[in-house]
Length: 298
Image (tube, rainbow, N blue to C red):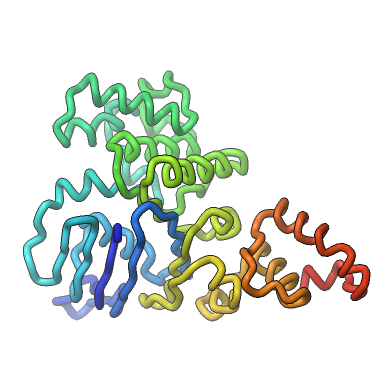
């Protein structure tokens, strides 16, 4: 397993009158080399959970195992520097991550901090920029003079420059245009499928991640209300509504088809193309049963 949590709770200001429980009694596992989506309403504990994955936060109770590092509540944490090199975290707001005078210095900061030479760090910075579709001329620019989309891509590039085994991203497609969002999701899928990295993504845009995610974790009020495969989620998407989330259109459409044509057990079709092909293949049955187009959109 890439990550395993056992009976984990996290409490902010746990020794004060203003303590607030962000996570409570969570058990979960994330297999190595998988793509995992995390969803939940605002305040459900998503960002807190991500910060446990690379040791920014330590559990108040329970055990967090990440690769070969164990973080135990109440015990000194070993190997945190090495863990943070192997687990890259991209924050929800890129301005929290960028702080140097130039983009190049920002991207080189991590590799240099972990002992790489300046030349190797610069080469990694250039490769990460190209991977993110950013012009190399931006390396000399102040990161706070980039557009919102450019800054977000640069923040992701700063993590990729460290070549992490696990990449954790908090709302990575926010502020990106539709084309850039699709390109980023495709890049993250390649990092997993072609390079064996574990990709963990918090997102409110479930539709764009559903076709590629291997599994989902859904949080509700600091607890794991659901953990399972996309197929399991597709079999009962109402769990999302019970957690204060809207059911994505692709899941709603697939559920309507699956219920009408008894498609239980089949791999969910969750892209417009796959849904269209499925409807086309069922066209003769649609004609025979007299299903109306509107039924699929219910």
